[in-house]
Length: 150
Image 1 (cartoon, rainbow, N blue to C red):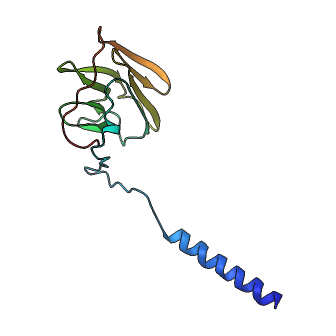
Image 2: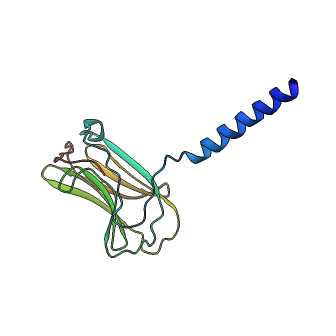
Image 3: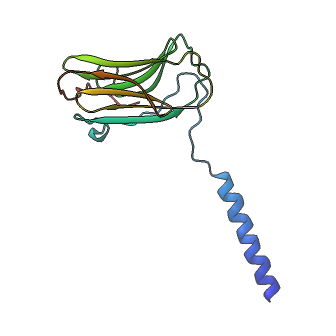
């Protein structure tokens, strides 16, 4: 009886293991116009302060197109992109975008990118090192348009 119970328990474990390996919950990007919509929740649209970070590995850092890392809308809010080999972060405040940039055209592989906005200053980080600080001279909240954060 012990042997039958042991075999039955092993069989259940094997079936559960195989089933768990078959269930896949992940994103797959083919490299053509891929993005994830994060919705329109106000939680994703802070007005006074914001920080964003990501680990990225673009196929080429010196792209001639615009590669969006994150964007809250096409015309307002905040964004981080790579355009023509330049890493750029921006926030829309007081009727215009405040931007910080850093050249990444010679980079390869995985890198950590981040930006922080505190109402006045916009900080751009690359691999944990502060690369650019932009002073907006006065505190302003971030202004948002409609649309999803992508």
